[in-house]
Length: 378
Image (cartoon, rainbow, N blue to C red; front, side):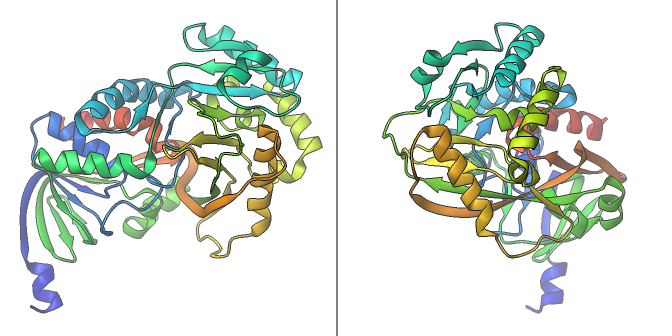
């Protein structure tokens, strides 16, 4: 069969065709299945290999704001249900935010006042130490009990396996070439589509370049590493730091955050310049996923600067109170970034382009998808 004949080969039809099998695409497939729709998923790789498997596995619900908070809170209950159904490794472990300066602790006090004791529990230094190993200078912190952790290297694959059992047809190693109101043309043939969701993350410009330009979509590259746990103990929660206070919109309601920004900018300008979000989670095997840095461009430089990894390693070691860390793996995560956290667009009838443009796809996608489908099916 020639390539032209293969491209014209019919691949059936579906009420919903999803382009992209990352967490955003899978979230739309999950919600469609729950509505009783037939679903086909087109994914260019043999399995999900992008941002959905390269992240911390952190459901960082509490630190969101606005629409992201609304989607996140809805996503939380959906993660709990899906974990049971799909056999996900999930922990309702919460998040510890470590304060190593008075202004950082003041931000956490303000955050608790804004959100209440159900969402934010203040900790003294001993309370932090009970939950994680700490270095010198920890004044206290906060525990965010609503947050969860999943294994990102297992979650997307387990969800896809569960969806397949529900009758979803996956077209792996298949590239979507053309998208029309009722048809998706792929490298293996044509699929008739009642509705279509294009969820290709930062690659939205590959399909709809003008839309991506208008939305200001860029790529954000993250330096992340897997290291051996230097203390050999279980660390149940995700762990954030003072640098994290500058990265999550939920903390924007706290007046003292500006002081944290000014102090860290004066004391550690090189870390602010690289967009450090000093945090980590523990993997099922005990190793730690640490990171991360943020570099933005429409087309990313293909070369990784070792200095960025060294900053992450040094600051994580200091947070944990050790001299050095043993690196097991290094990688670059890439996600879509824009001025707003979500891109939801209708380039043609019956088609929605959906991208989480703030690095919070794992946190929000399961709550975002039902609203997108409500609108698409209306």
